[in-house]
Amino acid sequence: MKEFIETTTKSILNKYKEVDSWFQCRYSFNPYRGCQHGCSYCDGRSKKYWPKGGNETFDSKIEIKINAAELLAKKLPTIKEKEVICVGGGVTDVYQPAEHKYGITRKCLQVILNKGFPCHILTKSDLVLRDLDLLKKLSAKNFCAVTFSFSTTDDKLSNVLEHGATRPSRRLAAMNELNKQGIITGACLMPVVPFITDSDELLDKSILDLSNNGANYVMHSPMTLCDDQEKFFMEFLAENFSENLQDLKEKYKYLYRYGYSPDKDYTKRLGERVRALLRNHGMREKMPKFRPKTQDEMQMSLV
Ligand code: SF4
Image (cartoon, rainbow, N blue to C red; front, side, top):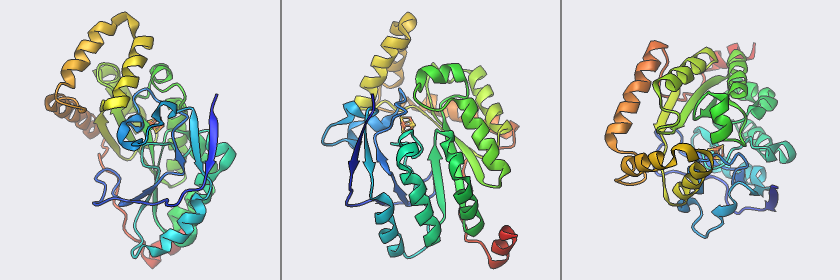
């Protein structure tokens, strides 16, 4: 049973100290707090995002920032240069089921369009297709990229690891459709879950599926295991991987022996494997950088 808590927030835009190396933006916002998708590996559960507690209801009690669009409309004009606004920062999904009811993300996209800003959307849901009309206008006027997030493209495994999210086959279909409609599309293979989604067979399948369905870039990184995120993931393993639980626990203990990231050798090898697959498919690792459209380009895209 999901509970929605309607709140009015005092601030909406997060400003990073430096440009985010993945998403190449300095500003992001989250219209919701918590995520109904409830993926087993989500680092949105870690304490750094919940300094006052409350993360135990991360996927069941969703905070709805009902004044998000209004605040965004006030805040955007104070930014001097038209920089990319990242819609969703990875600790909530802007197209989780609550969006069906509240439409806060859609209202915010309308504000971004009205104020003339470029944007990047990160999601694990095909509900983004509902907003195709706005995405097209954002692309024509400025810049709009949509990145779909995957831990794997295997539907069966996804049903276990990220039961509450849209299945990968539907995400792939949505990415394909947006790509055909001229929207910049790509993927985050994040997180790759060690010992579960990192086999050669599954990585091959994921990159092939992404390549065949409109991903122009694939960012990638392995799972972190941080305080309450780790606690939740270990409980999840006990419930869903009981047959080889002891083996998995020992492997994770060793892999994460230096902290919340896997050891450097693992990360390096994984990166090399994914990069080799991307090269084979002629795909890049980074999303394209935003550059303002020239007058000619704007006219062309409006034809
Ligand atoms: S969709 Fe993203 S934000 Fe939501 S639970 Fe999954 S990983 Fe976390």
